[in-house]
Image (cartoon, rainbow over all chains, first blue to last red; front, side):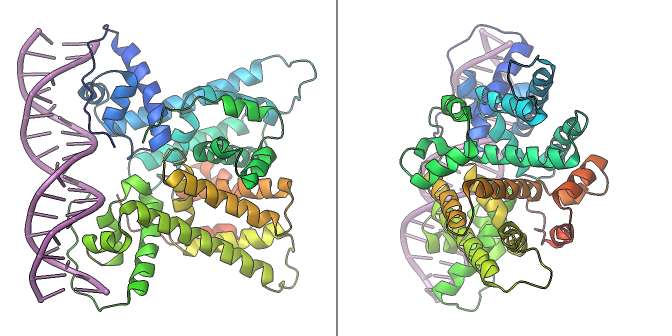
Length: 209
Length: 209
DNA sequence: GTCTATAAGACGATAGAC
DNA sequence: GTCTATCGTCTTATAGAC
């Protein structure tokens, strides 16, 4: 890990709100790649191009920053689901709930680290502060699905597919896609349609380790 | 995090192999709860009741220890699958591949942290050393399924179910099971059968944070 | 085979200037 | 609103004794 403390060149003053939003976005990207403990506040500061103490100042602590990142991820996700359900159907498009919401879930790859940050949070159930928030977040997704036409069985299957997608993203399977035949087959089985193209286009983090 | 460095009382001498095995087991349990970066070599040392420098001495580095833990988890998992496929069917038991192997997957909860350690590894795809190993590990599971009667579609569905199970375990959903009605419903949907009892019996880590 | 002691570095957070 | 400087702590790894 780099030991270079951020000493960013003075930036244009932004409103506190704008900075917070910018830093949370940067945090999603770094937390997604390196996890909660593996991410330093300086990593986030560099990604957001502000100084490390300022990140801590704005959020109070790294823990709070992570909680804010989770919240941002969930809010964006549920908002994307809303939009997907409201939008009129394209001609010939599969109208199943799973397809519409699933598509929007994959489109969220445009927000760097969103899926992986959530997955990291979901693995921290034993953490006294993060654990309860992560459980609540997962429950909110479940509730959303149940209130929007999913039976428990369909919600269950949808979430399973989503967790698998998160794994494929976290593994960066697309990177080895071409060399390992097992991975090529697995990748195809997971993305039978044009979704693979979307995944390949997903923004990459400039090597964070 | 505790700052107490382990200074264990002198232990009975074991063979290097025995100690390694013991430490890897302890490592699975701690890595599973706190992740790769979040786990200190001292955490593992305390869990294994040896000194911190000795853990490093035996494995060379924390990174190597994590790789050993992943390897142990995969080996145990595939061995459990083998056993599940070889065993004669109980009377009236569902003979589907998914059921037999899935059951053995849940039984692996007896090995503390096994599922979560793998999930953590699967989220570290961007790591230069761990990433390639994690991808290879996932590919080995895929290959195993494909060579034991699973079509790509069935393998895909099985893995999705497994990743969801890992999430539920990592979240420690069972802990809130009784208070949050959303979680109770979700929990039931994920474990329609007696599996829930198994999950509840799953060994807990004595609060690691 | 296993420990104690400790060096060297990295990290989160605070103080305080501008 | 944002930075520089810095403290104290935690952490990995090494040295070396038993």
